[in-house]
Image (cartoon, rainbow, N blue to C red; front, side, top):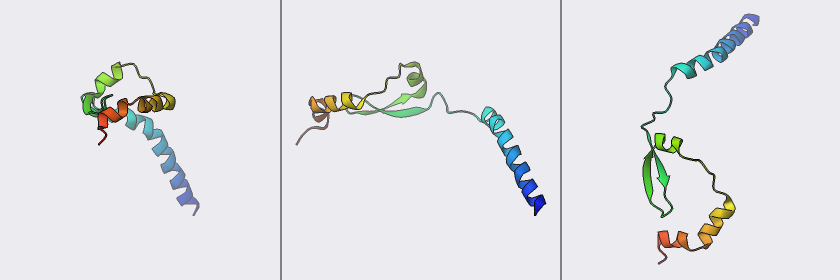
Amino acid sequence: MATTKRKFIKTLGLGLLALPFLRWVMPSASEDEEVPLLTSDGKLVHVKRSTLDKSKKVKVSNQRLYSWMKSGKASDNYGSK
């Protein structure tokens, strides 16, 4: 029983040591990969990831999103029937 515990601990240790190496060897996401993006007028477009990485990233607050929805611009995009 003690040998199986030792084998398990050795295997676990080697696995943890191999993780940084595997991240270095394995390729990352392609720069040419296209990701879906929702525009302000409600259209879904595909943009290259390299373009997004170069842009200035600003997270939209909930308050700003709610004010945009209440302003009527959101309903114009989806057309009220």
